[in-house]
Image (tube, rainbow, N blue to C red; front, side):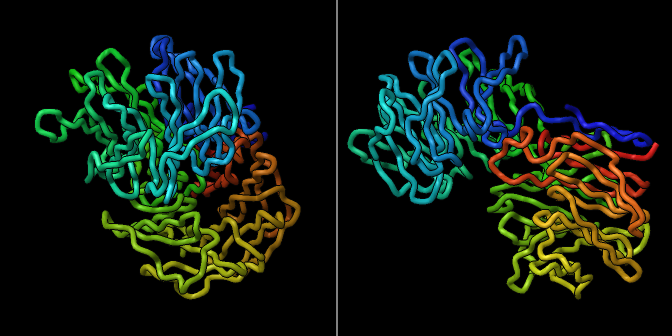
Length: 515
């Protein structure tokens, strides 16, 4: 059911919902369709380049949670890795799903050798390379361990398995029978996938630069086969002189004609699961999108200005801009700040884990300043890369979202269902919300995003009343509550009496405003 505005309010779309919630492993099937594994979206999809049809092959937490990579057997069976579920599963031609292994931590790359043997690797420090039996559940052989976060692998013409080691910026070649290993290629900036082109040349995805590198058989050098944008997850040759490229940061799917270099955007970049939305001083939106920080132009165009793993090791759950720099909160409770176009550096927090990041204007119409909350509900201003003096004591046990305006600060505690407003002339506490995860302050009102119901509330700052101004927002996602993580929908005051709503359930951003 789509989001709707209450009577007296209008709903406008700023960023349209996403079609794909991350594009991870991809393979071109025998019929020419592109199969797309979506870890965040909890689904395995098949897209037809000729008709444009996008269908779900398998999905949902009960069906195929968190698929990351896919490979086809000779009988059409799709073998799928599920890193968060620690599984390797098989999806039969008729759609039946069976689990082959359920104790494979961070199972990631998967490939089927020409003779039908199935191989899987693990994307974790000290990971393993496995041969997995396809005829009976629970049968596998450890080929070798001690691999530094392997990703999408492939068997080469010489019968060795080639797998990228993300931690070591190199590609290993491993004999699947003897476990004898050698470095096939090094100095690759965040290698994410390995394939072989129709002529048998080794091709590697360099995720940090967005390039596909082909090893030249004549002199051993590296030719740039295709160039897209940083964040490549995987790629698959189409058998007609082109290659499809997936991007785990932007959720895009592109096709590159290798003869002409022409890049076709089959699925454009989208928001994968926005965790926070705020306004920059220039009026543009700043979104923390779990794997990246995104700037949204007035026309809805997206520009990724920072991303995992290039700028941060952990996922991004908050972002704020004060005109001179960008402050980011990662899921491990660390704050990072970048001045201008420099590198991100850690903010001095005195060793405290930060619970939430927001913005507060010191005066009406003034530039926003980052504020952050730490355990115990204390809110502090971030000034010059450090916590400044206390802004407010919220009296909440844990602050999960906060925002300020002038001399007031609003905050919420999603576990207790509470929203607080504190300041020189105001002190209010509201109870009884269902999982409040986003809060904003605007002109005598507090807006609350309620993830438990998909509703947006407007509260009178003086405590005189409250009303629902929007319903059925896609919170708790992505994919309508089927995520493997807790959702973090967000709201932000638009400065004109309305509120911007970022929905992590479908990747959209809407504006609610009084008519």
